[in-house]
Image 1 (cartoon, rainbow, N blue to C red):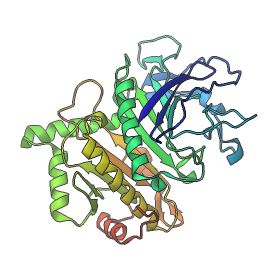
Image 2: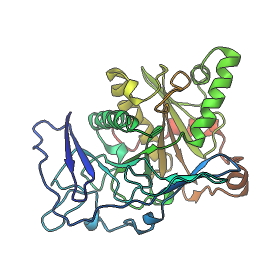
Image 3: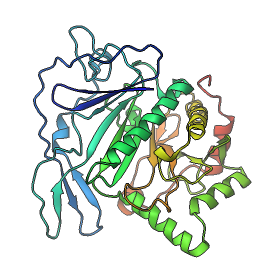
Length: 362
């Protein structure tokens, strides 16, 4: 894989990751006249929960569901420059033009009952392919392997930035999820704090380790593999299963058999194996209702500083689609009290996924 670093017209960084033999050098300049981005994002800590909230009012003006001919994530063409200056690409990463968090965030840090600070961090866009009409599940195993390397590269790079406490690669897919750009892409956030979900998971992992002397994910993985009722797919290095206490009507966790803290810690063999298994999982998810499943795919990995012995890297894929044409809405119990009520039994979902025809030929 060849890695090329460039700069967009407003100073944002863009990185090309080429896996195609003989791919041309990435030297195209961005011809657009773009103003330098002044970011006024802010974080405030809720005194009732201790959780940080990001305020990013400038994102109200971000690009919203453009037609395919005006997609900003497609390669540039003569007379129509996009976010990617090149006429083609394999995988590309660039700083988000409308970031929730930025290295250039401005503003004052203020203590008090509700502390606030500039929304420092970094938000990147990851385009998995130049093909606007495809999806992640239709990529080749070799391309998915490249994306895994890209996730690992960016995890290390963002984690090395001063003030970044957690790196979160994820993909949102589908109108029902709220995706505003349909081009196959994901994002990576570098947060200036450890997220509430991760803090809760680390606390539970620490409690379990003290009580049992073993990592909780290791015991969960062993139990799921021994039982098999909720296992969707297995390979030499990974197992995909529906969690026994699944919150979402469709939810799968993809877990490595070895405890590793983050994506950069995966071996070449584990990365190869993940690419093949994940495509099998996505094919069955799309086969579940014989349609492209709207989903969120979220990597859980260690904070940049500490807790590496407590973290077990894994991928969580979940959907709000509870039937082929019905959505699960977060109502009073979920939104108000964070107590989840699931209409789907995890064992039934796992059986349906195992039986589902894969929509892709991997």
